[in-house]
Length: 85
Image (cartoon, rainbow, N blue to C red):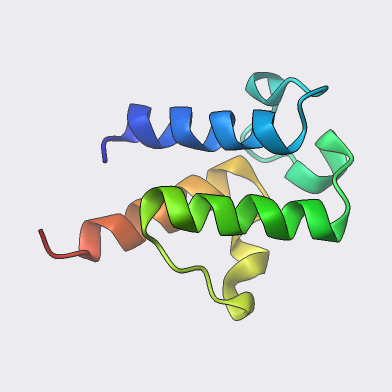
């Protein structure tokens, strides 16, 4: 998955979780939950959907690495680069 595909996937899933929000307006270092007013259940659903879409497991111990778009992209990019073809 390329970086543009990854970005589109993340934004698409965010739009599904928070249809009234504009995820494209999020700043890279902005807290996703706070900016989109997501409760913990919605954020968990978001991470589950991202895992399903990308094939990257995000263990609970790593959730804090995914609180911002930059952190999430870095986490997913690193995990995807380690996946065998």
